[in-house]
Length: 81
Image 1: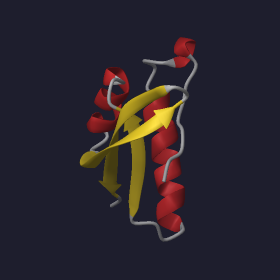
Image 2 (image 1 turned 60 degrees about the vertical axis):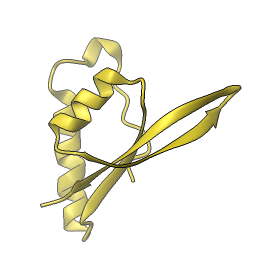
Image 3 (image 1 turned 30 degrees about the horizontal axis):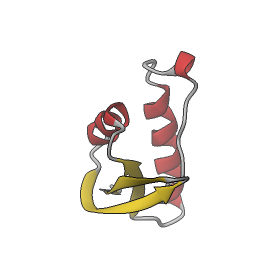
Image 4 (image 1 turned 135 degrees about the vertical axis):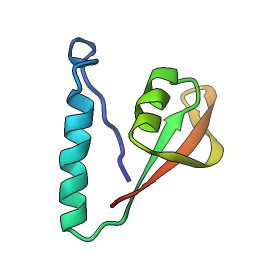
């Protein structure tokens, strides 16, 4: 489970997220992992485009409470190869 991958706005759109993800993926594979899973707030359109571009697929939707707000959360999964 990837809990949080957050880059400073000044560092976005430089392929750094892809590079970091690839290194985490290599490590996870070396440790025997076969999938990654993330939770993504539905309204995070840019984040969704990023994860989709890496091959993540939505497996379910749920809701979570964050503060006083209920948010729709998409659960995405990537099969590691």
